[in-house]
Structures are given as C-alpha cells and as structure tokens.
Amino acid sequence: MPPPRKIIIDTDPGQDDAVAILLALASPELDVLGITAVAGNVPLARTEENVRKICELAGRRDMAVYAGADRPLTRDLVTAEYLHGVTGLDGPDLPAPTMPLQAMHGADFIVETLRNAAPGSVTLCTLGPLTNIALALQQAPEIAAAIAEIVSMGGGFFEGGNVTPAAEFNIYVDPEAAVIVFGSGVPVTLIPLDVTHQCLTTQARLDAFYALGTTAGTAVGELLSFFERYDEAKYGTDGGPLHDPCVIAWLLTPEIFGGKLINVEVETASRLTQGMTVADWWGVTDRVPNVRYLRDVDADAFFQLLVEHIRLL
Ligand code: BDR
Ligand code: CA
Image (cartoon, rainbow, N blue to C red; front, side):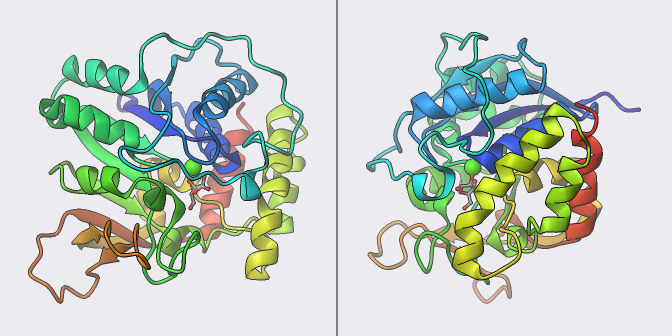
C-alpha cells in the first residue's frame, strides 16, 4: 500500500461535516495532520467543540484540533441553525469533549504545516466557508507550493443554490475567501450541489448505518436522521443531500465521480447572485480553467464506501 495521503481538514460541523471527519479518521489511506475549525454552520465556539466531540467519538483524542476564523474575511457571519440545530450537531447525545483545543490559530497551523512540508505533499479538504484557507494563503502565499490539491465542498450551478436561488452556503458565507482560493493557482477540485444533491440519505441508507450496531454507526444514523429533516421538507425527497463526506470519498474513490477542468468565478458584488459559482461548463468564455468541477457521482457506491468505513470505527 502506498504511504497514506497527508491531509488537513477545515470544517464547520455540522452533521455532514461530522460524517466526513469520521470517514477520514476511519481511512488508513489518509493521514490527518490536524483539523481546523471555522465559523459557518454555527459560531466558532460550537464548531471547534463539535470537531473535538467527533474526534472523541472516533476514539481519536490524540488529534490536533485548532480554532480558526470566527467570521468571514469582510462580511458578517451567516449561520444555519435552521438546518443543523442550535448546537450544529443536534441529533445524538454526544458528551462534552475533554480533549484539548490547540492554542495556535487554525490558519497559523496551516501555514506552519505547509512551510515545513515537501512540495505538493499536503491536500487541504474544506467542508465549510473558505476563510481559514484564504487567511493562510494571504499570510504566506509561498505555502501554495506545498499543497497537492484543495478539495472543497461548495458551490452549485446546474442545481442552483441552497441558501439563495443562486448561491450555496459555504461560498455564500465568505465569497471573498473563495475568490482568493480559486485564484490561487493551486489545483482545486470543487464538489458542488450538483453532486451532493444526488447523495440522498434515504431511509434504506440510514438503516444500514444503524444496522452496524456500533456506537459510531448509531451516531451517524442519529446525526443524519436529524440533518435530513429540513431538506426532506424543502425538496420533497426521501432523505436529504449528504454534502461534505463527498470530499473525503473523492480522495478514496475518485473513480465514482465525474467532472472536468473548467473556469469557475465567484460573484461578490451582485445583490441577487452574491456567492454564486459561475461555472463555464461549456467553455463559452476564454477565462482560464482553474477548477476541476465535479458533476456526477455513483451514489450507491458512495454510501457503500461510507458504511464500510464507519464499520471500522
Ligand atoms: C454545505 O453547507 C453546510 O450546511 C453543510 O455542512 C455543507 O458544508 C452545503 O451547502
Ligand atoms: Ca460543512
């Protein structure tokens, strides 16, 4: 087996972030160097605490967890308690964490880790607004050389938006950060709503997590049972979209996804479309391709991968 791929997870848990973290921690193919929390679904004090709750659920009290930005680069924070509940992890009754939070700021951890890393050796996995990554790139642009790839859940084009008709939540919360990341020259893989809306937590799929009969399996079932309620009502589907674990699944099984390298720009000025990811899928502009934009996924294979890995925790 090749050496595990080094990754940093940047996240705003969020039930779907939690399942993504569990998937990563269950994967021997991945070496999680640290986890940085960002304000997003809920304020930073909640997201960093939630990261530690999930690490403890996975039996990884040794994981280095950092708190990063408590607000977007230039805007007021927008949160999503209507979807995630007031804690951000409503659903299971997870104990308050006792493992430590690292003293260093999350963006500083990213800078320091990448400064000491070999060229192209670390993958950044982003599950929330891109504030911490943008701060790190602004602070030390030379770190771009150490990044293998930024794999990011965010945006949407063919599906439209989920927080406004045009914008997806992670990009909407901090569009200026997304502009910096997509313009950094680092290879970016974007996993938009066009993909994640194909990954529905149907009752049969939730049952497979409960059927594991493990603490982690039951917690995933409870997290996703809570998480899907808002979206089931909104979209009228059996199950809601499972967004963030797609980022980790891309690292493990890229063959179940389809997409292509295109230009993606982020709208920051328009009242109606701020935070929109304008994806030039058909190549109708001469703008330089900067993002590998995924559009398809084998959803059954994705959920099979998830269940097989959660089983290992
Ligand atoms: C994204 O927004 C958050 O609510 C989810 O955790 C996911 O990262 C989906 O738009
Ligand atoms: Ca998230």
